[in-house]
Image 1 (cartoon, helix red, strand yellow):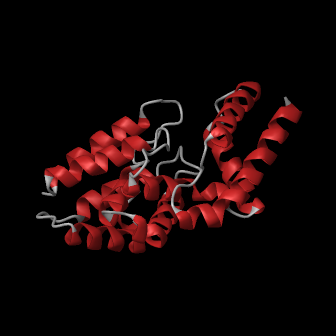
Image 2: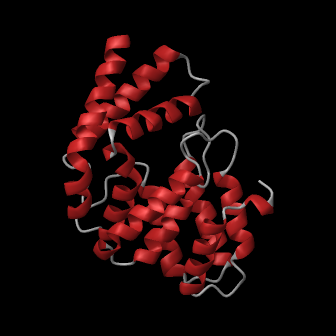
Image 3: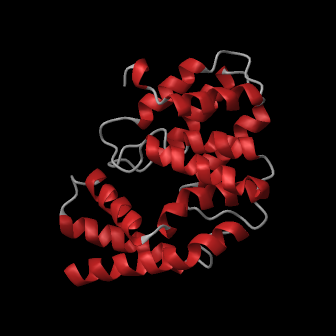
Length: 216
């Protein structure tokens, strides 16, 4: 993605966030590199639109977080490395966060917290009392609780990202993911997200699972 195509609203949000967090180097190059990553051609769902949506949900849930800006930083990095054919995306994203944020002069404690939060998106299962983890995970999973048409667009985009996987294998893998999500004692941990998204998310997940099992 050429620099000129970097979404201005996201670049401005990144710059403001890094200045607020005490960056002692120009955050613009790192922001443009992140946005280049979020705009890679293999992405269909995990795009700058997803980043923008997650950041918006973090803002809405920020009152629940202990360190809202650490959560915002983690949102920027949580899918910064994304290859659908690889299993270590979250770990590589966390390593990228440490490298980039350390280079920008952020305190080590906050950098490590950001990396921890990024790694948490492997399971979306924060420990009780992990308020920052609850906010990030709820923001990332908010798409599950959208209107049916939005959920259908999300599911279709995920399928496009895994277009290299044969249909029977994709259905089996996707169904396993859906069952895992439905088995969680709570899809959303913050009161606001639970009230807003949980019922719709469970309906959407169950409907997709039924479709997959019917086709299979």
